[in-house]
Length: 115
Length: 115
Image 1: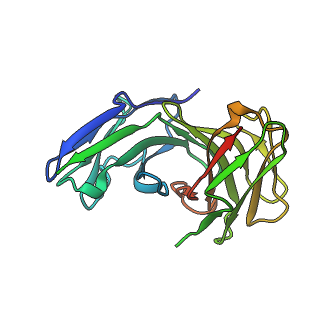
Image 2: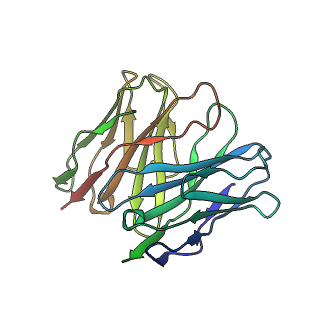
């Protein structure tokens, strides 16, 4: 069975600094997708960034980028120039390829941003 | 933008009551999901539906049932509420056609307390 592990329950970063959140996953499949979701306090969970396993190039979305290491089964999220609004729970998620398929979530990392 | 609406943000019920949590999406998505979110456990899938009148058990279906009579609505039912079902419940929907990297879109969540 596929599993997703986020080894950092909590992280802290100074405003304007860079922080990296870790995620590893276990799968024997070659076709899959990886996602990072953000859940601000008492607010809706939203997609931050996604990565297709078949793509070698790391995905980027403005200040958010990933380091996708397929052989190591690692999918870390880097947040540059951290802002107070980045404070949230961050969840890494895996989905098997194909039109159907459920997300398997990690347990989350709580990110605090210090002014 | 996709809109996933959950009927209540906060709900308080008593042990033994039958509880209905409603979720509506406005983007004609085929797939819909119900998750339970607990601190330190991340998101766990209760039930999902690939399309109208279809339903599949997730990882923790015991004590729950679902209904999907219309494409836009997915209801979660607690047949006889118990205190261990006190939790945050999240609904999500997803477009299943096209690219496999289609993300899930989440509602705001319902914080359910069973007394």
